Image 1 (cartoon, one colour):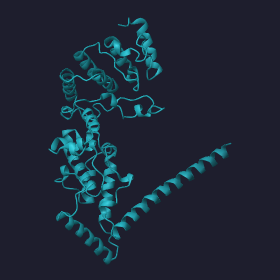
Image 2 (cartoon, helix red, strand yellow):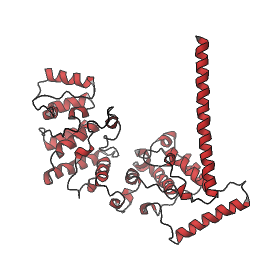
Image 3 (cartoon, helix red, strand yellow):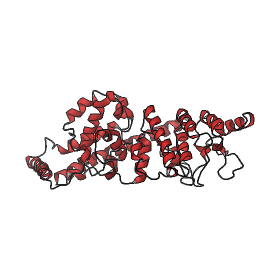
Image 4 (cartoon, helix red, strand yellow):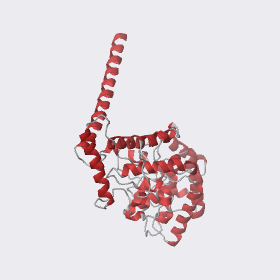
Amino acid sequence: MKIKKKSENKNKNTNQKKQIFCIRLFQLMTIIDQYYQLLIGTSIRNLYLDNCFEINENSTLKTLITTAKLILKLKTPPSQSSPSLDLKVKEKVEQEKKEEEEGKKEKVFPKFIKNIKAVETIEEIDNFIKKIDKVNLKSFLDIPINFSNSDNNEIKNFIKKLLKLYFSNSDTKVSKILYFCYYHEESNYDYKTIFPSTLHLIETALRFGIYEILEPKKTMGCHNFLPKIGQDSNYQYYNSHRYKFLFSHCYDKEKMIKFIDRIIQRTIQQPEPGFQIYFLYMLVIHNDIELVKYYSNNVGKHLQIYSPREIFPPTYYIESKEMLEYLFYNQCNYFIDVYFKSYKSSYFKNLELLKHFELLFVVGNFP
């Protein structure tokens, strides 16, 4: 039995080594192939369109740095190459630069980063790496330690230089999340020309707590941002961060309160059916009792439940016992079953919450 186990472990290790070798070989062949494309005259700008090189808010700082280094290496001819190849690459780069200066080529990077100077050398990147720790390196680009802390302006500014290098060598467009993380506050650029989709802009406003984006909108259609029944049998859409986006990129509690104030004012001046309760649902999903209390105290504690049948019953949005208790005693309508109005909903995310609700219902004198 022991011999069999050792044999299985040995085979497992061998397979793992083979997989690692194949991955590294593939990476090496990819780099060689890309450099070969550069030598035979393919534009540098078309080398980074593969998904594995796409940089967005879900990329780590380390990934961005690695990609930037790769771009710089591919743009620098190896010292051992023949003089004729070096000359060919040099002439190609100079020709591209000349065409750009003459305006014969359209810039692939957005105007709002036009004046940012891109990273020029690998040494410059290495010096930057010495100034940051592993936490920064492993963090995603939309994490606040990279862009929202005033102490990290140096990190934020260098990331913008890395992004400039990336976008100037790729046909990839800047994502709305990266734009609002790194450029919006310092730019007068009209973001509506970059992101024309109304739905995307409303989602962005909710993520960052920027009410000005919502101001010109006649309706918000908040139910479009709530998880819908039947979208996925395993509820993976809800369990992911797809629907937990309210204030997902806003880390200032005061800013959140001001945003809620503007939302409350909007419901008075510009009523929209179901809006008040939909926004409460999103606050419950956000799972911040302080914000739920603030909103509830200002809009009233007897909101009428308005739930289209395609979305989950509101009890499913509750994440904690504390939130359950607060809603139980302060928003009694929240627990009305959306299908059978004379019943209370028992559709909770887990058995623990259901049992706690039953306990409150039995001994807590349901309002």
